[in-house]
Length: 368
Image (tube, rainbow, N blue to C red):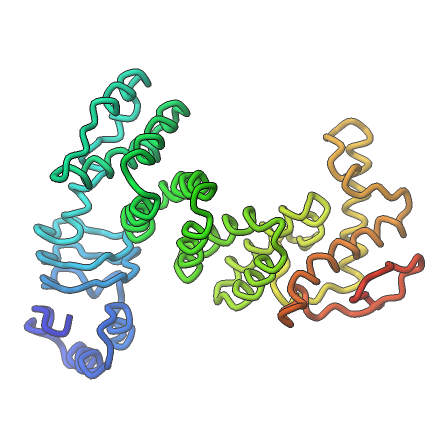
């Protein structure tokens, strides 16, 4: 990027100083260079020359490239509708390639056809060496975009017949995750779930690699659902996600884990006042436990009056306030202990209380 035409423009003294800082930065990562130079993605990349820049895997969402020369740019950047390319010259660039990829070769209206037409189209596929990748991308596109279950199953069958799961996963990585195709993330994980039965280790390895990406929350949810019987795998995942830098991702992970552990656990891991899932290391006071208990009793009353399904009535079966409170504590302790093997408790700073009916067999208790 340091060789780009951006450095040949007439710049102010302030801009020249920022560029000097950028050039001296010992990095080839586009975003690191931009941060080092103090550039603003919304204003500093309009009407400039960025031809032949290697964007690498930079996250370009929110960048404004209005009127910019992007010819010949390479890499596999993440971008979407928030990346502004108005009047930009993208000929021969990674942005131009996206325009002629699987999304353009089969317009959205294609998968809206009646299912027999799509089935017949797939039946005519001939996987020759010269069309191998093009046809594979089209099948993948049909699988992910179609809302018809029969069409999706047929596309999946053809993919499985012609391609090894490893090849399909490479396509998914490139066409979905590396390109930041948010609308395809859910069907992509659906497809990975189908292949999990065939090659669990390969799929698990693929999804684990996504834990370091912007798709960490989705990847963690996928792994949680497939490690119910493997406590060691769950605890390893807890340890890893506890170190994730984004609070929203950590909370989403805890919420997903709690949901897999049951309705009761999913309810007690949320702040009764805000509805937000508690984060790793959250301090859950005796007062908070009382609030959770009261919320459960209130919902149970509504359920008893026929205003809602008997969800919490079945999840919290105790008939007394003390009994419900003990069940709340049991659930909190249960999910907390998911992380203790690695010294990473989910809720790490709980205080201890003396429960009247003694919560037996619990390593951790709460104190008022």
